[in-house]
Length: 500
Ligand code: UD1
Ligand code: CA
Image (cartoon, rainbow, N blue to C red; front, side):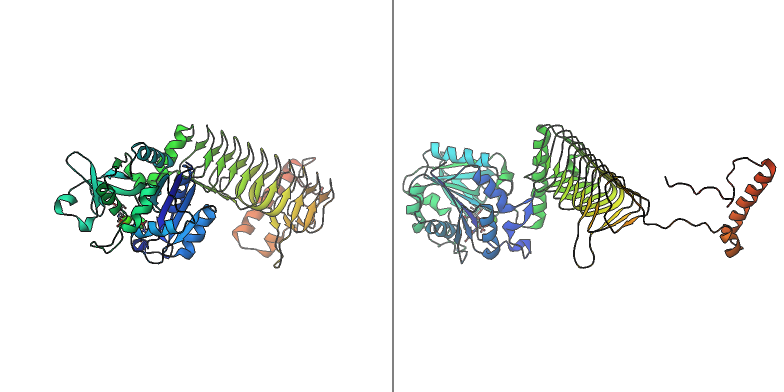
């Protein structure tokens, strides 16, 4: 809408939040409240958006500029009322709009949707109105401006709670706060709004009576979905709106073909993208810009923030941030994916595994009890259970590179920087401090020595010694009874068993 200007009011204090964070910056569904409003506004493709900031503008201003760099910020030093705020907004524009439509919204209505604003703006235009009100019919109108209509139902004025007569207070049609103006009318009328009222504020809503006095058309359109214009003034309301927003988002994805086993414990942020046939199990939170491809199964009890999950991948009881999981890969149960984790297609990050800055190749596996930090693991490689990529020498972080189709033993430590070549192996318990050439077997543990009879002589009188004695007696008895040809002789010079 190229002749549309939108003004978002966000200069108020929001004291009931009892927070050092400005009200409109409180977050639900992965965005600030004002972020939701600005997204709804952007759907109209307006020519300009002016946001009025005041209270804590050093925080609100940069946030709004970051979200909408093309927008205009207007500073209202003192909050003298919504009429004053709109005057400040118009003054902030080099060329205040003289034609088209000016839409006014508030920065604290996170459920607001673009489609609602669009329909309202279109009705305003087709009615040829000077002012249109997005109204609402509510059971408890206390605190809101009431829509006063004459006997014929024609809107005459908006009367604020404090200025209302008892009869007016009984009116249940209220001003949601969202108003549309003919730009020329607003430009002319805004300077005529006074502050002679119970609050001593410049009420934007007084523009309604000014339009009627001039014989202009005023219309009010009750919104069907009143929650869309509801503001969150305290944290209890914020949580309620947050749950409702989530319910709406989850429902939308189910309609798009996502299976959600338990909508009540599934949380999906507004910017998450899901493919059809994704399955979400109970206790799953998909946050930020997370994207999940088709046939992936996530959960139960999984939190993914800004992650990308490939088609058909399985993520069970995991916590991930800025991680990319390939198609068909498997994660968890109990995995911690830190930023920079890239798991290739059909790869595995298994149980009690923590990864960070780790590129794990196609089909490569880190199945059990490991820390993989600052590492690269080639395709098809298997990392043994209990392996630590020791990336930190106490001063700086270093990288480890493991080649393709390597097989490393259990309980290894890779002391970075170190390179393990393609197709290499390492023995159990190896501490790899030097590079391992391709195809080599690295072992750093010394050969095992068995000190025969040590327990019986050094731990005499213990249950351990008794058990040892018993076993030794049995073996000796067996040996004398049967005299096996190839029995496992006791310290009798049998070959040391090869490690498996
Ligand atoms: C306003 C409306 C009322 C409506 C209600 C809906 C007026 C006079 N009244 O009342 O009819 O039913 O909203 O919630 O418009 N703001 C500024 N600068 C100011 C004053 C307010 O930016 O100087 C912003 C606030 O941050 C807030 C919004 O405007 O986002 C509404 O202000 P608020 O003081 O809450 O108005 P209400 O008294 O609730
Ligand atoms: Ca309010």
